[in-house]
Picture 1 (cartoon, rainbow, N blue to C red):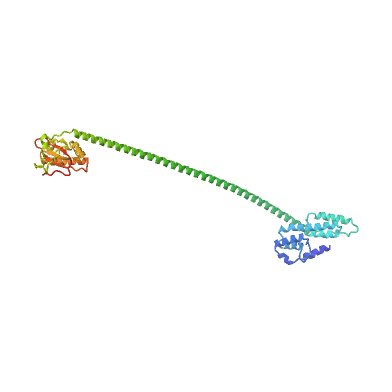
Picture 2 (tube, one colour; picture 1 turned 60 degrees about the vertical axis):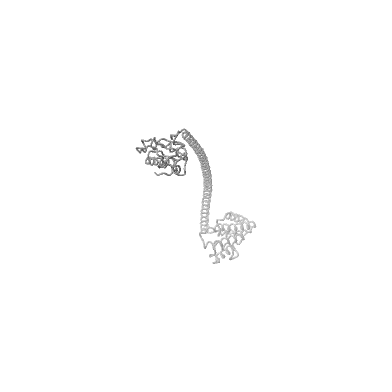
Length: 376
């Protein structure tokens, strides 16, 4: 009973400053006081004062509940030790404190029943009167216990919800990581495929370019070969044509009469040998159509082609044997046009010889640097 009165006095004289202490620090201090068995004393530094201060500041903060039960368990332990020592009165004091502060402490009822049973068997022992909690205290402590249980249930539910959320988040993270890895692998595969495709395209393009270059080289070589063949063929044709012309010239028979071979050709009526004379022997002669000359028929140019080609091939000078100088001048124009059509750079060197007693003709002579001088 003495301890009960002391505890009540301690509760009534509880330091007012404890009500304003930081709750977290206060919880830590209460736990340390219980561990060090500073349960209800010394005054101003014990767990009971801390519990009362915490309840005053935060009546609905159920973090204090586990410490209250721990406080009650400490007193139940002290009571059991006192019972073992057969100090039933002291044991009852401890049990009364537990009933007042933590009536729902596990083992409290068993300790009380044990103390009551053993104390009755001792005749010499004073009668122990249990000061158990009032109905109001029990109701209040039961309400606190129920609230604490509800809070624990809520905390457990919140913990389970958080665990589920964490598990779901972890699973989602693992799934996302797997998806990212798969996407990365797919992208890498696609990149390799694209690179291989690009490399094949480049190799194919290079092969096509090489093949095209080879074909072009073959075409160029073929073109060069064909060009060389054509040039050779043209050279053969040219050589054959020259040979044929030479043969034709060799077969041509001069129509100049015998007496003319020893008589100089007169030009412009000049008879003395020297200036205005063609003294060389004719290398070829070509007859002319007298009627075409008389009619000034320009189609005579067609019959002059052979003689013009012979003039060019032999670079010969020409003597035109015509009836009049007018005929000579007209024939000179025809021959000039004819040779220029065959070779635009050829310069015709021509002279006139009067020929009134026979058909007109032209005679080819070794080339001169200029025409013979004569009055045209």
